[in-house]
Figure 1 (tube, rainbow, N blue to C red):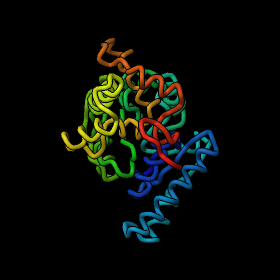
Figure 2: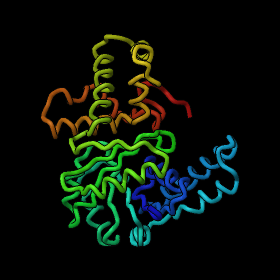
Figure 3: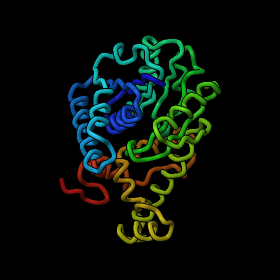
Figure 4: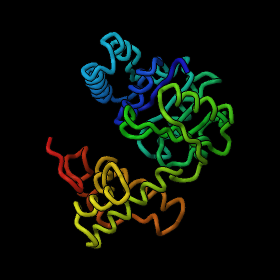
Amino acid sequence: MQKVAIIGSGTMGSGIAYVTARAGISTRLYDPIPEQLTKAQAYHHKLVEREVEKGRLTKDEAEGTRARILYTGDLAKALSAVDLVVEAAPENIELKKKLFHEMEQYVGDQAILGSNTSSLPITEIATAVEKRERVIGIHFFNPAPVMQLIEIIQAMETSEATVQAVVEFAKKVGKEPVVVRDFPGFVTTRVGIMLVSEAIFALQEGVAERDALDKAMKLGYNLPMGPLALADLIGLDIVLHVLDALYANYKDDRYRAPILLRKMAQAGHLGRKTGKGFYEYPS
């Protein structure tokens, strides 16, 4: 993997772009919204400066990392001659299928098309392209520069060669790959979101107060943060969307969303990104 393109420069896309550039890979970061690219560039500058201050990067390495990222609003330019594409657009199946159809028009025959989705079926996304054997899930975790896991999702028609190439890519960028099958929610989202959801139900039912609930889960299960704090980090709108998607796919009541979560999302209390969720985050 010498050249990669990241589609979408939001929180996940910009984080993934930093990871690949830091690993020595030529990276194109695409977004149709110029303001998003400007924001991503500022984020990358802040990251490398922090790494230099902590002695994790030399100034030359920092400059090299920055220089390896091309910020562009031109999709054809972003995808020209790349070995791998990682789509990091919002969790909307129709949007992702449209993007994959467009992406296939610009990449070479050997390029791998990956999606960073945390819950949507890769097999369905693959129906938007002709060469379905090269479509795969590449699920990074937030924040991408810190989290070590990459969940690799093999769809029904994904080739073994594609899987192995992405496993090697994950290792090259310093991550730990785990290969799973293409079931809605995969492993991490399906299991992890249930922990968060049940915690919100417990809060909604008055089983425990917020701080007590998170403290009990942290100390009782040796978690780095409580499930309510984790929900704030993920974004309550994302948690709600994932639960709704799982419910739509499995038709199982265990994936129903707590009404408290839905009301908070409706009110715009989405967690860290809005400054208020289950906790408050002063700007």
